[in-house]
Length: 255
Image (cartoon, rainbow, N blue to C red; front, top):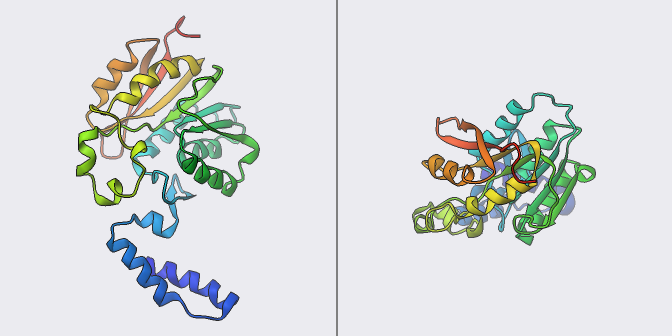
C-alpha cells in the first residue's frame, strides 16, 4: 500500500518536474511507520461509511465501530428524504456528520469541536464532499449556547479511562489527540456532561446516537436515564458489542 501510494505521488511528480522520487518517498513512509505513526496519517486519508476522509495529526482517525451510529440513524429514520436538522458533538474529522448528510440529501447539519486542528480537517472534508451549503462548523465545547430543536444528534465522545491510555497501541497513544480519547478516571466524564446537553438540544421527537466503549452500557445508561432522557435502543457493532446508545427525551422533560 505504501509503495503504491508513493508511486502515485511519483506519477504526478514526473509530469510536474520530471524527477523520480518514489523510492525516497517509500523509504520516508517506512521510517514513519516504523516510528508507529498511523497509516492513515501517512496516507492522509481514511475510509468511513464508503466515503473518503482526509485525516492527519490533530484529529481522531475514523473507526469502523463508529459506523454503528450511522446504521442506527438509518434504521431510526428510514425516510431518506426527511429534512433533518443534525448535530455532531465533537465532530473531529466530520465523518459522522458528513455520513449522515450524504444519506439524507435534504438534511442540514452543525458540527462542533473544541479543537481548531480537528475543525480544520472537518472543513476540508466538508469541502471534499461538497456539503458547504448544508453544513456549519463551530469551535465550541459541547455547544452550551445552542438553541434546542435538533432531530438527530450524533456523538463519539472520549470514553477511554485515563489509566488505560498508556496501554493503548503506540499508534493511538503517541499520535492521536488525547482529548479525543481520555474519558476521565472511569471513562464516563463526557457522558455526565452530555446528559443535560442532549436533553436540552434534542427536538421533542428527536433522537441522539452516542457511541460507548466495551462494557460501558450499564454505566452510561444509568447516567442518561437519571435525568430527562431514556434509552430507546442499544445497537451492537459487528462484533456484537453494545456500541451505540439511542436516546430520546422523556415526554414533558427538558425544553
